[in-house]
Length: 390
Ligand code: FNR
Image (cartoon, rainbow, N blue to C red; front, side, top):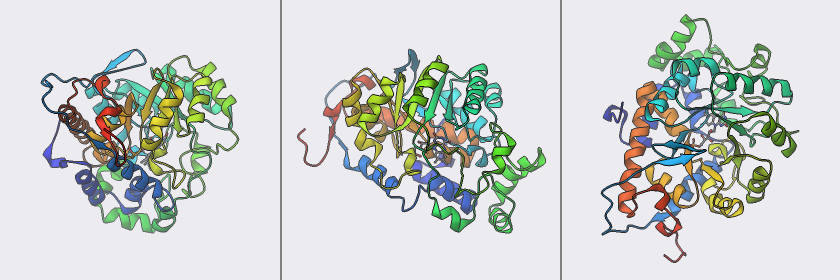
């Protein structure tokens, strides 16, 4: 499975196709961030501001995108970020996305807020599976999810810590979209205007047992999630502290990754709590509005944690060149959220494979332009920003 011109040539093409296919409320739920979408803008601006300097006349005929993470080799520095509700974009969208990741040999992170269950994705997709956990006020709930992930063979645990309270997504007030989806008059009208989605996704769920529900969560919790403004796909996290992270460390023996760190001091605290990796992330601009771009904080975080810590960067990756910039400025690998989701929305497994092929080809091309043959050759010397000296 590889690049397919039917899905377009870049992120914007895919987004346009997804916009046509998905109901408006669902499209906005994926596409937008929170409040005035300033964090999303910061993320995109940060990548634009950083230039890459071409370095010709070096032999770059043999290029490798391989990276090593937690003692394993991966063919390219790209992981699929956890994205709840991917199963609303495509029938069994999590299985489709994880299958594409498996075919490329890159990790798929499964969100707590998935439609498909932990066990179903392991059984039907396989591959290198990581599980993303929101810490629940009731530790028994977190323990249960963690044990299920371990028993199903998930290799790494990602704990997301940036969603302290429910984000303010005013656009979902306006468009009437709720999580889980409800069959309101308005939603049905929206679905009717998008018949391919209505038949191919919602229709198939309805035929196979009813409205899509979040199979990793107990029914009682799903009922309390019907208002996206007041709840969402995550528990209330405002009582959690670093001690909770330390307790989690004691319970999970495999690689533990903390996601949603931007401040260098917090990165140091996370390392002190014993995590194996950090995702420098503002959640794709979906939690605190006008937070700094992850890309702007990355060099500061790298400086704080030293050269050996495993750092991932996410939020705003749209091109292979963004990935090259992230690696050059301190990341070991990146995570992609919306880029993969648009792939899922337009073509399921084939759509996500298209995205991965596109990014792989772009990274390889950019490596050649900047005169590098391996990911570990990249450094800040490949980048330039107005005001800096090359
Ligand atoms: C997310 N993200 C997310 N993160 C997480 O830890 N758990 C989750 O359940 C979700 N759910 C989710 C849903 C949707 C619709 C989106 C777009 C994102 C955040 C995700 O893991 C990642 O941090 C961002 O998506 C990265 O930004 P880009 O690549 O989308 O710009």
